[in-house]
Image: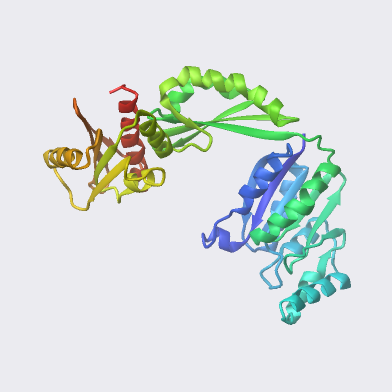
Length: 387
């Protein structure tokens, strides 16, 4: 089993100035060839801290892939940090400088003197050609251990992963076309602890593994299998996925890429129903997301900026149903006292009126997603004739 660790380098990452998308891309690329990732570390542009992080990562893992810090400026310290890991000097490579000059020439530009820093590599390093950027990447081998230093620019990093790193790792570690494949089951209105009570023993499996990810009023179950082929991974996951489906039943609204709003629209289309929505305090979140999957023949919406009473909301729902010939009307009001958010929701059809009020004491920033999930789950249960 080959184990990798990722180290992303850049103070701008720690300051939140840019988002780290490189780790997600690398992790998925390694997953697809059967390489396990146990840790991800982000370090600022400090040579000693980078060196210590790389040393620790190299002791724990077979492969360490770092991104960033390969530019020409003083605060691009990755080359020096990797050299310090192995206690070797940086060595100038004339051919790398020629490549940099040629690259700049294609831009009709002349590099500054500090660009020459990019032509230095650790003495034991091997350059990885980078035809899509000016920063040469490199790798260093020590026994069965490897450090691979890639540019932080996503386009350059992705190109080098696709054209060099993946094939290099397959050959160096004799990776036998092993893949890691995941299947995600989305549940709604069932907390993480409640899900754990139902499928807890499955979370101890080794292959496939089963893990939980909690969101406001939603819990995802991720089943992950390692195998030599996609078909074999599917075969490993299938009985586990089927057992989860059996145990959780109606709490599941979709799988993999299916969103809750897409699931609701699909049910409306299947039942040939029109849904109208009257919402207040939600920034039109429900309407906007549903309309990504349906036109006005299926979804009609009305958003109110001001606070409205229960009776006013019910009256508006009745008017809106008649105006739009809706089969079902969802009414939602989300309000807050600064600490607790309160959701009042109602459903009106030709035969009945259902309503409910509940509170959310979690982070204010999560309240809107909680309200979105809770209200659309009420629609889902209504369409399933559960309420």
